[in-house]
Image (cartoon, helix red, strand yellow):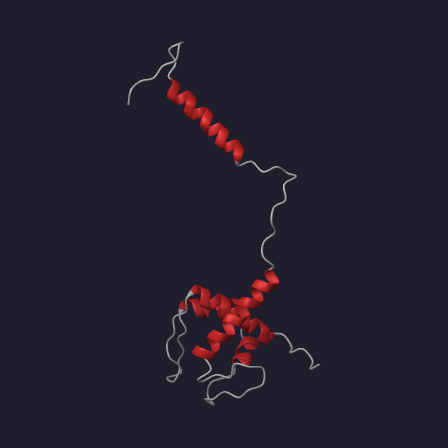
Length: 136
């Protein structure tokens, strides 16, 4: 690259670069009066995750486990998920899913969950932990 100097002999490239960096940095500053959009409604996001979790439970769990608030498990030895979620705290249940669901029951298949599946399933299982709303 050719050396470019100004009338005083200073190199122009570093000075120009410094000016450019400072100018661009100033563009990213946020004016305290500027309206910053709020994050998406966490309640709606949680409801969406719970819906995905329920759909996942229908696909992956309902062949053996009851997945609703009052249904019976198709496989008598498989406890309803609503009972499991009450017996185990959410953190240990989530950790169990993350470690890969392995049980001593021969009928229970080994299952490895993706992180997004765990998040969605845990959101849905939380809905089973809370009492059902009264019928209207």
